[in-house]
Image (cartoon, rainbow, N blue to C red; front, side):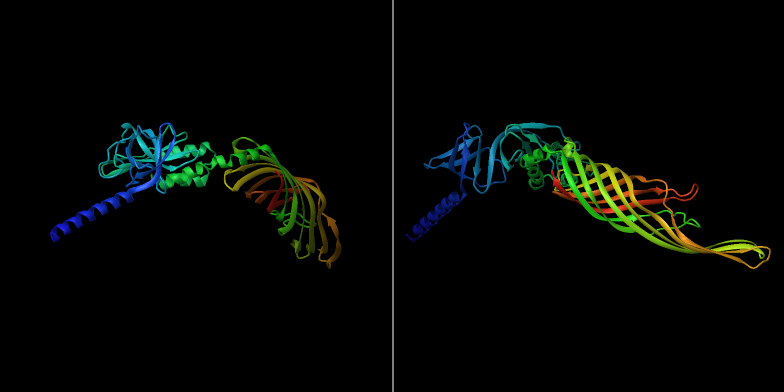
Amino acid sequence: MNTKKCLLFIVSFLIIVISLSAQKSLKQGYYLKPTGDTISCKINFRDSDKNPDHIEVVLDNGNKVTLGLQDAAGFGVYGYADYLKGKVSYHTAHNTGSDLPEQFSDNVQSQEVFLKIIKNGRYHLYEAKLLGQYYYFISTDGKQFDELLYRVKQKDMVISEDKSYQNYLRGLLEKEGMLDQRMTNMVNSAMYNSNDIGKLVDHLNKTKKTESNKSSNHQKPFSFEVFAGPALNLFPTGFTGVYDGGNHFKSALSATGGVNVNYRFASNYQRTSIGISVSVNNFQSSSTRNDSIVHFFSQNSNNKRIYSEDFSMKFTMLNLNLSVSYILNPQSPIKSYVRVGLNNGLVLSGGVTSKYTSAYYIVANGNPPIVTNESGTKNLFGGTKTILSLSIATGVTVKRSRVEVSWVMPSDIYVADPGTASLKVGMVGLLYYLTLSK
């Protein structure tokens, strides 16, 4: 009797365990009828890592039903995964393990399966585990599925990969105008898995969200800016003073500022624009030279001039700049650009002066030296009133602000007497721009 009770207990226990296990595998979910209706149910769902060809469901009325591909357009298990029925074509050769082909296989098989939905949006990403390996597909309408192709071959112990899926994704990103350097790096490093490919699809699905912003940016091609910043004025060449050449000014720091009007071309995501700017720059510098000039013919015939010159420079210039800009990464929130232009500097006022003193000693025929002293102020400025120069710049733009480093090539500001050195002026600027209207 005790033995019978023991056996009865064991059988009852096993029945309870099996019942609890079955209940545990039932997950709350839904399935889609071919007509599109959604039916609430519980699904016997044991493995989310495979693509089933049928599902066992328990309806709300308690009826148990087995549904195949002809019975359901899709199903989902809340908190786990969603599946959509679709017919896909895929390459059958292995891309993992030791049984790799020597050549990239072109063998393709078509099959109707429940595809696991990885990403939803404008672009849908699906996963299917077929022939013991994972495949990924992209669709925009849930009907036509494009295989993200990945193939592997092995010959003479050398494994080669065909990462066509990267080219496919790169093409989609370029089509959406999102293929900047950062996205290119993401594509090139993307492995054939749901995580890496899913991140790229997430970026593709952002295009619709930003479409209205893009269109609003295109509505107003003109923008008006004000700018200001420090400028380092450069004087790389020597100039001729009252007595001799080879005089130099040190670089001078000044403040500059002005206004700029941009016109952005509508094509190619407004990468290219033409700008016209007007700015004022006021700079000054000074230098001193103490030197002598000696002409020695003999002890009884020679001359020498000992002189001192204090040079001062002061200019106020109006700069007109016509330039073309090109944005390198138009889809990035921090846009970088390069700019090339022609700068026309108009001298409004100022010049270069020399305050000089000298003593001139002349010895002739052995007589005592004759000394002549002179002093005065001379305006050395003369000649060209405009400076035509090439300008190059690079910078970054964030929303309505941009910061730019610019360089204006040194050019002649004036020419002294024929045959003597001219004074060249250039500039390096660090400028901040603020867009007032866009």
